[in-house]
Image 1 (cartoon, helix red, strand yellow):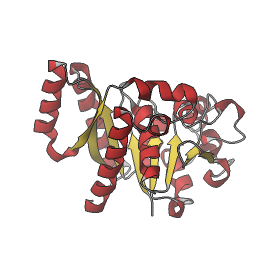
Image 2 (cartoon, rainbow, N blue to C red):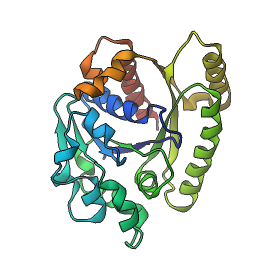
Image 3 (tube, rainbow, N blue to C red):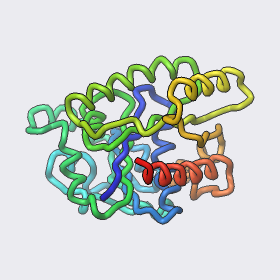
Image 4 (cartoon, one colour):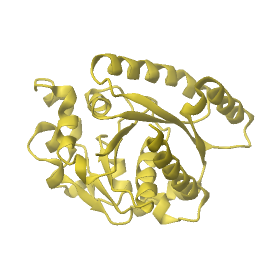
Amino acid sequence: MAKIFCVANQKGGVGKTTTTVNLSAGLAKLNQRVLLVDLDPQGNATMGAGINKAGLAASTYEVLLGSADVASARQRSESGRFDVLPANRELAGAEVEMVELDNREKRLKDALALVDQDYDFILIDCPPALSMLTLNGLCAAHGVIIPMQCEYYALEGLSDLVNTIKKVHANLNQDLKIIGLLRVMFDPRMTLSQQVSAQLEQHFGDKVFKTIIPRNVRLAEAPSYGMPGVSFDPSSKGAQAYIAFGAEMVARIKTM
């Protein structure tokens, strides 16, 4: 049975997609069977996994509306060695079309239940807003991974996200919990980064992952080649950090 995790943060530009794509590739390197679900209409995770979002026969959009299933819509990321449920601009229309559907918050959960046995991990890349799409991700997941930069504004947004997760847990998905906070784009030379990092550890304790993802040019370059950074330059500091994060995730699952 797959462990399903949302990678979510209501703040944009905090490395959600980079984390989802590279964690998927890092877990695949550890011989885990992984499905990446792209829930963002921008389709950046789809492109970052090396899949052409312009030529999709079926995507997350069709799956949510019930005209395709995950098994027929998924594609293989050859560079990352994991499966992808891809997305493109069409997905933005699902927000409106799902309003009148029955059980609209749990469309993704029901669809993923049919491929549950095929994977060890299912990772969901959520859009940077609390929308019907994000709600579907949170209702389908066992837990949330929160990537965040060690900056003051990130702390402000974190309290909003934690409150959202509590509400979803109380009303829609009692399995949902925060798996952990992942510090990304970390620059140890900045005093503020170190201070915020220390605050997170003090306040959230073992909910903060030990692995820290450094600011790394090779991770930023990789999507333009249609590859996860973990595959693009496995020796880079960023790639090594995501592989270590994959190992930490596997270890943490065993204790859950």
